[in-house]
Structure formats: structure tokens, C-alpha cells
Image 1: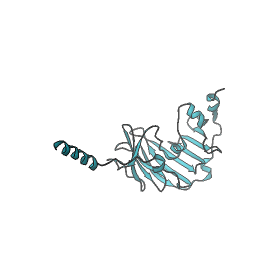
Image 2: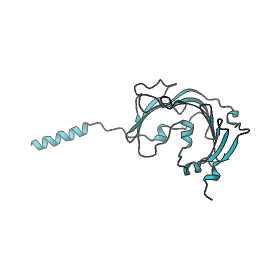
Image 3: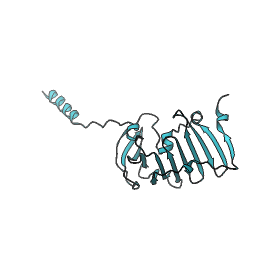
Length: 213
């Protein structure tokens, strides 16, 4: 009789224990469908003394431009197949322009994708758990309305406040301090934003040095 009661108690306890919410898909939560065709935003990223400023212009999924600390310009354009892209990096300090294709970035071990470049959020490389979360203590106030999610990869948890209006992470905070914070957004991108000014610069084609003979 005692054994029966003990087994019954264990069964009731197991039935009453809450089940963890199933993990949501990265592509579903951080969806790009319905995002503004044109987007221009400013963000601060990094921590401590290594905080940088990034300005991004994005023309749908065709082309984008990133300017880091007002010095390094990165232009990215999709190929006709919509998968591969070409990257042109303009270093205004060294006055050097470097061209490299996505396939060769992969050969160098750089797995940056279009979503990361245009949104500032990298796809998980392995197993992960993703679900609703809360703002960590000390996190800055988001620039606009957004919803917090916890992205768990092994022992690391990254907290992301995602805007469904702009389809953009407004704050990314592994702990209390943010490593990414959007400070302004607008949906006006002039065509001149993607014009490269490189007169007198040294031009380098990294593809020729990387591609196998």
C-alpha cells in the first residue's frame, strides 16, 4: 500500500510540473517578411571603451551600405541569383578599396550572411533555444517599441529586443549592458547613399588572391 501511494505521489508531481515552452525558430521570431523596403538606422555597438558607431542604409534585399565610425564603408550587393553577394570595403584612412565575394569570405572562415549585415543579428551556428524573455537589469531603454526574447546557445544567453515594426533588434544585451543599441531609424534611403567615392584610392581584388587556380 505504501509503495502504491508513493508511486501515485510521484506521478501527480510529474503531472503538475510545468513543461518548458518549446523553442521557437530563429527565422520565425526574427522574420524579415513585411519589413520596410528602405531602412536607414544608427546604432552603437561594443562595450566599455570599445564602443563603435555604425550607420546602415538598406535597399530591400538588393543592396546595403554600412559605415563604421565614419571611416570604413562597406557596400554589399546581391547577385542576380539573390544568394551570392559582392562586398566592397572602402578604408578611408588607408585609402584602399577591397572587393571580395561571399564565396571567398566563406573560404576565409568568415560566415557573415546578408541577414547579419542588414540587421546586426547573427544566426546561431548550432543548437539553440529561443523564447520570450524580459529586459535584463541595467539594459538601456529601447529607441522604440520592441519585444524581448532570450536566445540560448549552450551556456550563453543573449537577450534581444526585436521590433516588429522595423524588423530590427533595437537592443542586444547578453547581460545588463547592451552590446547593440539602435539610436535612430528612418525609412528614407536616397539613391546617392550607395554611390562609391574612391577617386585616387588603391583598388585591390581579394578574389584573385583567394580563388584556387
